[in-house]
Length: 235
Image (cartoon, rainbow, N blue to C red):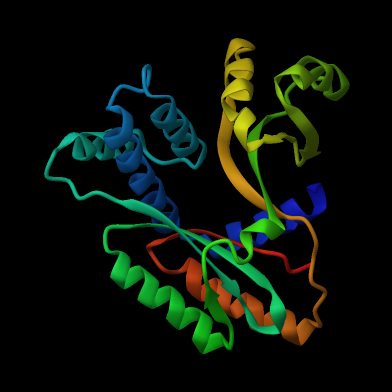
């Protein structure tokens, strides 16, 4: 899991080099969280997580607070989270997670990205069964002993633990997110980010030229303001 995850993370960060894209996505996540559970992070676990992620991405405090204030306004537009599934060229499975205030615009754009690249937008469930959804927590390694930490957290749903460039990554099943979040909070571990990611259960091997075709389509999708994440099973 670790190698594939780090590869995707590195490519994603390169494509998200413009912080405005990251902040736009986080701003929408704040709106969704506030409208779902209110503006107080002490009683709204989802908002608390998004704020944590925003801080980890170096989003300015005043921008975070402004997003919460806007979201508390009844006139602020609502965003709907919609997932699209399909196939990129060369048979690569694709899942696109979006947050949109205009579904007609978003689905038209997503369909265009698929068709322009020679892929196809499919129905819900057509490729999601090929991915496993997990919760991923990231925090600084500091003085933690990996073996001791693994033993401490295994009762809270820990499935895997990995270290990369001075940071620890904790992986749990989707349904164990809350248990692990509380366990880390109780241990006063300063989590940099916590989110859900989709991991392919098998990979499609491509040539360098075929991989470039798929990456071009993914890059176009990730430049779309409605798109939050794009997952694939390309090796």
